Amino acid sequence: MKNLTYLKDVVTLKVDTDKCTGCAMCLEVCPHGVLTIDEKRVRIRNRDACMECGACSLNCPVGAVFVEAGVGCAAAVINGMLNRQSSSCCCSVDPKNPSAGKAVGTCCS
Image 1 (cartoon, rainbow, N blue to C red):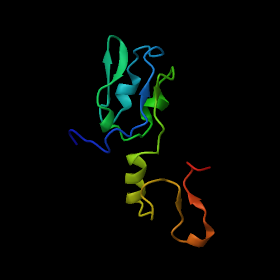
Image 2: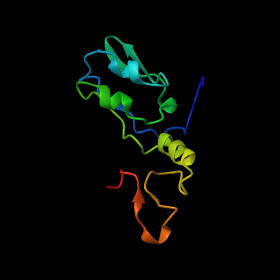
Image 3: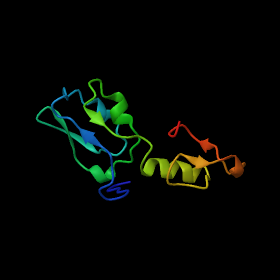
Image 4: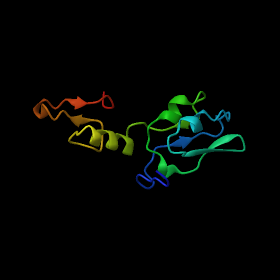
């Protein structure tokens, strides 16, 4: 999956370099090598490769990395694989009972 790009300029990924301690945990868990370390601080290397899985944010011990997990292409890919009617958000209507109008997933809760 070299040079993977989901959608250009839509990722919610942000880095607060002032908070970063340079532990590199975010680099360890990022599946697409989106981040890099420069001058002992994390930097975004390839923002458009981010699939917004949230691993970097969840594993940053000081809260220097932020991404709104599940809002981007990762959610769309997962929902598509699960054959949900809406592949753009995890807040889709249950296809088995569409009249109930109940959201499937937890992002809308």
